[in-house]
Every structure is written in structure tokens, then in C-alpha cells.
Amino acid sequence: MREETNSKILRTLPREKAFYFFTSIGNYTGESAASLKEFVEKTNEVNVKSLEFHLYRGDFEKWIDETLEDKELATEIGGLRILNYSGTMLKEHLHNIVAKRYEKLSGNFKIV
Amino acid sequence: MKFKNNTLALDATDYEILESLQEDSRQTYTAIGKRLGIAHSTVYDRIKRMEKYGIIKRYTAVIDAEQVGGKIITAIMTVFTDPKESEKVAKILCEAPQVLEVYTSLSEELQIIAKVFAENQEALHAFIANSVAPLPGVLRIRTSMVTKKFKETQFSVANDPKKLTFIKEAHNKIGENKP
Image (cartoon, rainbow over all chains, first blue to last red; front, side, top):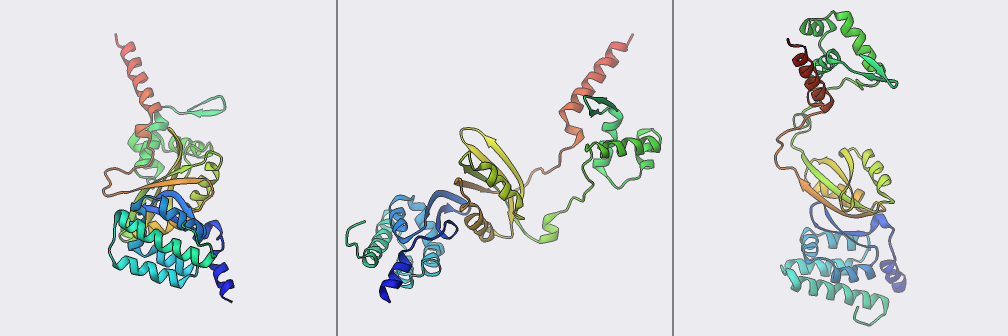
């Protein structure tokens, strides 16, 4: 049962359900993530402005909760929002949270 | 009004009729004729012919969007695309009710420039994030929100370069004919 849930969260989504990274209203960076694995990679690659934009709008939480269907990770990211981090600090914390979650779910205990 | 290579070549009277219609397309043939000093039957014939040959495409109403839909926002969206997919992207954008105008432009990269509107910034973002960014071939998007409108007009015969040339030529001819 748990494995089923894990693989559901780790699945690759169709293009239209991917997360698209913007830096502000209507300004798309060209980066997207269609799975948790890709999301982990992108949080380390995209412009930090994009991370700030989406985190404080609640876009990450919403996508992770409603599309990836990982309530646990969504709650954890919601907690990060309250801390009011920005810049590199935010990038490191966010990447750390999602990377750890990915490692836990995939059983791949390597630093991503 | 003459035919050149199966296309209708317009003369000064045609331009004047068109200009008159662009000011108010609901005025009668008689009113236009009076204004231009020509018979209403001439106005009728010329208008019918210009309709037939697609010079006059349609008669429409110019609507003030803010009066009808309340406060709306307008934005200019530049979509950078993979050249192989740009045609498809442009066609899909044309079908979206939020999109008012679509153009392609080639500077350093192939771009699609579209004028879009939405009821607020959130709706604009949702449209771009959910309906434009996921389209195959979209590389990135830049959007500028319109903050103040200085001019908005349709193509008018009053600023048609061909007409300007015509006027210039007419002036030259008048000059030549002077004793």
C-alpha cells in the first residue's frame, strides 16, 4: 500500500500537468517539472526569483498537494513559507526539503 | 476605380468613401454623396464593388471593453518558440478568447506577439501558466502589463501609405499642370 502511494507520487505527469516556473505574472522561464525527481533538480537550477514568486503565492504547495498528491511534502513546504526566507537561503532550504522527500520515497539515499 | 492584374485599383473618390465609412459606417449613401459632392448611386456602386472585392471586409461596432466588462487588464505577451512549432502555437493562441491579436516576428529568435486580456492579474497568469506555457514548442514567455493606453485604432485609409503616395502624386500633377 505504501509502495503504491510512493510510486504514485513519483510518477511522471503529462505535460499539461507539469509545474511551470515563472519569475513573475506571465513571465515563464522555460523550465518545467513533470515529476518529483525533476522538481528536485529544478529547485537547484531555476532563478531564485522564480522560487520566491511561487513559494509565496502558494503555487508549490498547491501543485504538490493537488497534482503530485503528496500532502506531507505540501505541508512541509507550507511551513517554509512561514519562515519568510529569500534568496540563497530559500533555495537551499527548499531544495533540501524536496530532495530529502524524494530520497525517502524512492529509497535512493543519495544527495540529489 | 480600375482593375490592375485582376485587383481593384482605388482612386481618390474610393479613398474618400472609405475614409467616410471609417468615420461612421452607418451613414447613408446620400449623406456620403452629399459630403463628397457625388451622386448617391456612385457611392452605392463603388461601395458594393469594394465589398465584392474584399476591400471592405465587414461593418462592425467598436466597443469600449471597460464599459462592458468592467475593469480588465491588457497585456502584451511575447512567446519565444521553437520555429518548427510556432505556426501551431500561433493558431492555438488565435482560438483562445482571451487573445485579441496574434503576430509573429523574427528578430534574433522567432517570437509570437499577442495582445491578451483578463479580468485580473491572477486570471492572466492562470491562462498563461495553464494554456500557453504547456504548449509544445514554447521556450519561454515574457509578458508586459499595459498600464496606460495612449492610442488604439484600426487600420485607416487616412494613414494608408499608398494613399499618401497617391496624394503626393496628385499634388505633383497639379503642380505640373499649373501654367
